[in-house]
Structures are given as structure tokens and as C-alpha cells.
Image (cartoon, rainbow, N blue to C red; front, side, top):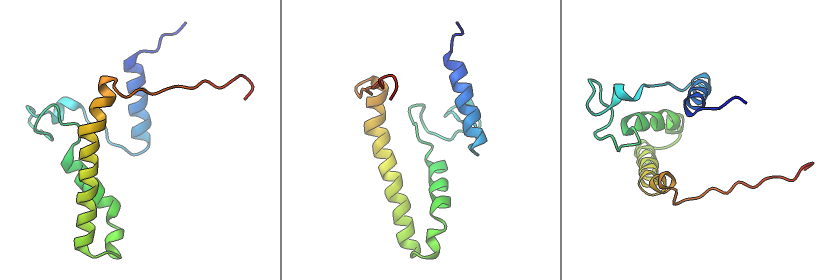
Amino acid sequence: MTRITESAIEEFAIELLEKSGYQYVYAPNIAPDSDTPERARFEDVLLLERLRKAVGRITQNKAKTIDTKDDQGLNNNQIRTLEKLRDTLLPKLMSGEVRVKLEQQEAGT
């Protein structure tokens, strides 16, 4: 029986994301104590500057039909929502406080 390791799953997920156009960044290269930090603390999960740029790219097409002030407000609202999720839901998921139930299908369905 072949064992599936955490590192094998991680490598597989990284490969899938890279094939979808995502960029892989080795965490120590962007750590707070690195030469090119992208977060102030190790506890920071969201890379806010990258997120702001991504949201800007996503909403760039909307900017053609929406006033610039409104578009900036949309970006800030999205960022605040993601920050709230980071601060409330993510710790619960990581601590096991939020449980995910797996329902098995009956054979033949």
C-alpha cells in the first residue's frame, strides 16, 4: 500500500495552482526577517499588498463603468471582509473549533 504524505499533497496542490496561473513563493523569502519581507509578522496570513494589487486587477474592468472613488471603496470593503475572515474564521478552522462533516454516499448512488 502506497502512503500519501503531507509533502506529496502539498507539492501536488502547488503544481495544480501553478498550472492555473498562480505564482509559488517560498515562504522564507517573504518572511518578516527576510531581505524581501511581505508581511510584518509571521502570524500575518494575508499578504495585504498582494491582495490589494489582485483586487485592483480584478476590478480594473469595473473602473471603466464605475466612478474611481466607488471602485476604491469596493476594494477597501473587500479587503476588510477578507481581514475579518482571517481574524475570525481562520483561527477557528485551524484550532478545530469548526468541524467539517463528511457524508458518505451509499453504494450505487
